[in-house]
Image (cartoon, rainbow, N blue to C red):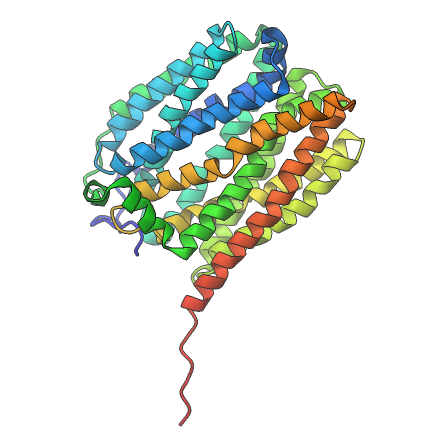
Length: 428
């Protein structure tokens, strides 16, 4: 197996900075549209009369369509014109995200989340490949990490914009602003020139199931997928329920809860993502297994760091503990993308990313978000307060998964280290 290669990999096109900037902006819009509903969930639940279980299902339905669309379409994406595809899907996801503002009930809103997942799945499968084509081999880990900063920053902006706008003008107008506002970026993407060099579309010659089997036969790819799924299990629960938890436990206004949730995610996960990518880039030259062991250490320490959030009564030390935990969890992002590129057969890069997206959600937050809501509802039915019920649900859903993820990444590093062990000297 080999990483993505192109004939022009060692030279950066003159417009690489502008092209990279547009990709980052698209990634920001992607996560703003995805996460703004989390900050608005207390308002949505109140107006539409939704239970915590239904609130969790809104997140889960998005993820179901997101992961299945990525899997089914990813087998064909390498053969498409990437910029035209990105432009069309951005316009589509912006339209359906804004359309959620007109939801009269749970079914309508759930349908918009299903459609949003389809469009965004296409983007996240193609965009990392375009980033890799822009930069030479020795800069890809760093640039993929910078590109991935849009995950925490966009999520934070979604929380903050959703919360502030929701409190000021209501959740419906907030969804229209955060949703329809991304359409201009899609129009810009349609005007971009297609790359001259692209990986061969090997997936055209292989059926979907055989492509997946080829990827999953690689033990390190499996380790990355399992470790990423465990991290996503935890982060998905936090991302959907953190604003609601702050409102219930600490009696914060929706706008304040959105800003604080966004601040924790933006500040700490931004640092964690960048630090993880830079550390992996520096260490993997001498120790290739570092791109597995850095995430392993991050998830393990993140599990312990999160504990005070669930047990202290003051908001400042609680958020400080969660911030440290989020920083450590997000260390895995850059090294994980690098590992996927390293383990992708030539011409299978988009498919490798698409299936990874499918797997981490299928085994991760597609379950953790509704499970958190279900556990919370069951605890309330048993007599616990809504605040205590949601807190306990988040703890039991989020913390154990981090220990499991650390084990999977560590195992991947062990396999990588064994393969790169120098041969023993023969006696004579």
